[in-house]
Image 1 (cartoon, rainbow, N blue to C red):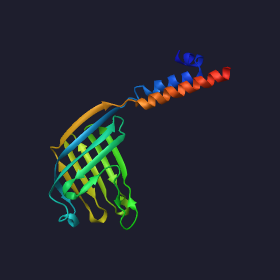
Image 2 (cartoon, helix red, strand yellow):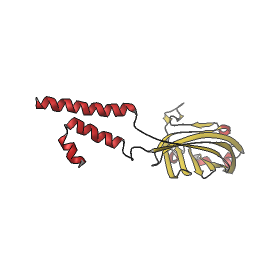
Image 3 (tube, rainbow, N blue to C red):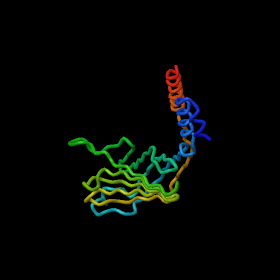
Image 4 (cartoon, rainbow, N blue to C red):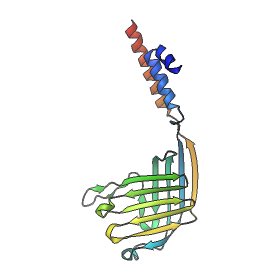
Length: 192
């Protein structure tokens, strides 16, 4: 029935209605989940080379923003006593050579079970950092190439979760309607 209706309408109106329908379909209205976390890490594992360079404890904070389909939208991690502060614009080095841009991966099993990896090139002896959430426990793993690595955990992390439904921006909707109107004008000119 909808196909028949769209065939009878001018092409611009039909296109506009089709795209508007897609924009408001349930799949397009993804749920966004923002989790803010903070607490105090305790070191649970360290390589012998890093024992004196990594503190026993460290305050930390950050957030992840992701959609319910597992797409990472935004993030930030700060580990105070390790002097680490990462976000999507973070790079490493750049003083003597080109700055390293990390490969970011986010694996979502559930809203309370996910992993965020910030890999500056562990295969080339650059660091990789992984933040894992499992229920109320946050684990931070630093892998520093040949120097080894360390693991910090907080089993009583403070985690605040907020959810919202993502809907198309007003500009997107107006743009879709403008395309439909343009198609209507073109169709009328063709008929003239």
